[in-house]
Amino acid sequence: MELNKEEILHYEKNYRANLINSVSGFKSANLIGTVSSKGNTNLAIFSSVIHVGANPPLIGLLMRPVSVPRHTYLNIKETSQFTINHVNSSIYKNAHLTSARFNEEESEFTKCGLTEEYLNDFKAPFVKESKIKMSVKFIEENEIKANSTILIIGEIQSIYLPDNIIEDDGSLNIEKADTAAISGLYSYHKTTLIEKLAYAKAF
Amino acid sequence: MELNKEEILHYEKNYRANLINSVSGFKSANLIGTVSSKGNTNLAIFSSVIHVGANPPLIGLLMRPVSVPRHTYLNIKETSQFTINHVNSSIYKNAHLTSARFNEEESEFTKCGLTEEYLNDFKAPFVKESKIKMSVKFIEENEIKANSTILIIGEIQSIYLPDNIIEDDGSLNIEKADTAAISGLYSYHKTTLIEKLAYAKAF
Image (cartoon, rainbow over all chains, first blue to last red; front, side, top):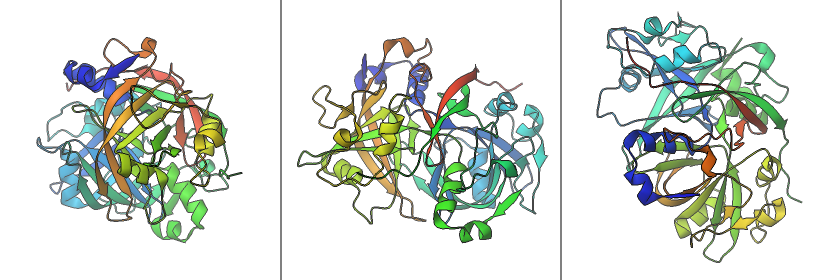
């Protein structure tokens, strides 16, 4: 069947959000850890963390417009630091709960049952229960003019991971680390490898 | 274990690319269909298609720098049109093969065993074997200054999909449509739903 733009624009807001959030395919499941200059920690789930480049190692994070205060955005701008922590099947419920609107004084860590961890003097908090995590330094932001969303670009400073998931070619077996995938706004998935292919050559 | 930036920068190029392409988590698996103004069709796999916004329905596509000619980019700029087609487990090998460097005159459709499909007078080709696909109109491009990658933003014109995957709340059950997920540069995964949660409320 076909759903065209005119129909989509007339759908009820939440129905449309669920639909359009589903059509891009599977998404990454990450918790972003930040701290304000006053020392308040924040933790927020994002399905919009993306690979941007390997040399230097860059990662991106698409954020909704900042017309309402968003602690993750404000903390990144104040401190130039954030952490990215993979969501796994043991913590997906806790991770999802971080999307609720808690007060500024309440840390999502406490409210959502996750544990702050501090590594190598990096000021932003990591999630202890996460198996693959990174410290990231803010580099630039780019505003998407069409809807005022903001693409935050950061440079990976350190990656923390179990040593048994690094493959011979440098790939990480994130499935072995139980990393989850997201579809839409609410669905959490585990994965099963179909096949790892090789560099594709023309013939 | 920890891998820090200094170590990462000294890794062999492909090893580093495999590592950094893995750390963002699972990625979407989509084929981008385009046509040049001369009528040559092109098909390319991308793991960087992302959700950008629901109203209007916007979708993004991160592309490597255009210092070498990239047909997908050039065709989008020439025609302002592209299609996004979900990769499923029946076509992941064909889809991956589109990443090989074929000559400009050779269409990846023919070389990779996928079938061109034309819907509703949209000029860019769809992939007949794909179950969820969209026609997209180019809206804007944003250059990431840190590494000259380009974020293409498009507006969804129509979505074509099996009618039995639309849930009551508008979400698509993309797992039921056998949509694949990618990790790193070479690994294709199928998924199993852990749980569909609800809108998270503070307490």
